[in-house]
Image 1 (cartoon, one colour):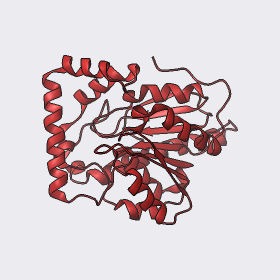
Image 2 (cartoon, rainbow, N blue to C red):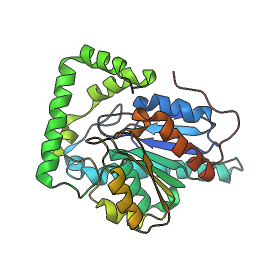
Image 3 (cartoon, one colour):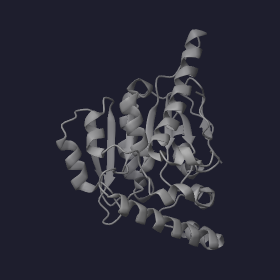
Image 4 (cartoon, one colour):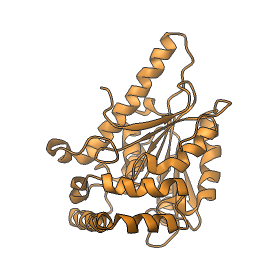
Amino acid sequence: MHSSLARITVGRDDAPTLVLLHGITSSAISQADAINHWARRGYRVIAVDARGHGLSPRWEGAKLERAGEQLVDDALDLLTDLDTQAAGRAALGLPAAPAPVVLGHSMGGATAMVAAIGHPELVSGLVLEDPALYGTRGPAELLARGAARARALDAELANPAGAVLRALASATMPESEALPSVWASQRMDPALLRTGVVAPEVPWREAMAALTVPTLLLSGDQPGSARLGAKGLEEARALGNPLITPVLITGAGHLIRRTRRRGYYAAVDPWIERLLAPAPGGGAAVG
């Protein structure tokens, strides 16, 4: 099935590929700094708008009732598309990229993890940036948190100029992502927020134990922000899955790439390079 998700693609079709899956209320273009970083390093970068985000389709009743599973299905449709394209190039005798590394933050991290468990052949590895942890909160708490996110979104929509000013004034927000991040919030389908769903319904420890692809697991230690933290990383290490590499980024919050940019890339870049050798010459950057 052809993926219906909107996406940004930068780089050559035969270049080693990174797929970026964002967190809730974000979007593909909200990751402009990351897209530019990896495009300049020679990768093909595909950043995706999750369903109900950015320019992707809105949530519909039947799909919303199984939102966590639908997020995984959408990701697998995209990865299958890429696999089919690579096979087509190979059949024509053209250079084809290996299976991509999928980098997911929060909701995107949990989605990538569950997708890779079901179809490990579609990915070369995973980078999970403080993934959402299904099974750590009950249904009532998830609904309450979803309602709180919806109220925060309503407040931002009521004062978009103020939201833009706050984004531009942020010490951690890359300039290229400030306006796109506000736009992403405005494009967010609140129907998903009201469900409280931020991850597929697979307990996170169970999922990590089942992974069969190389996985870089990142978290920070900023109190009240980082989800996994040092304790969660230790729990992941204790699962005994040799394919998981847990890394603590000191001082980072939930969005590690923004709160500790240098630490994030220092951990992620060499790990990716061990799996995928970037093509020389790089790609065009996103303006």
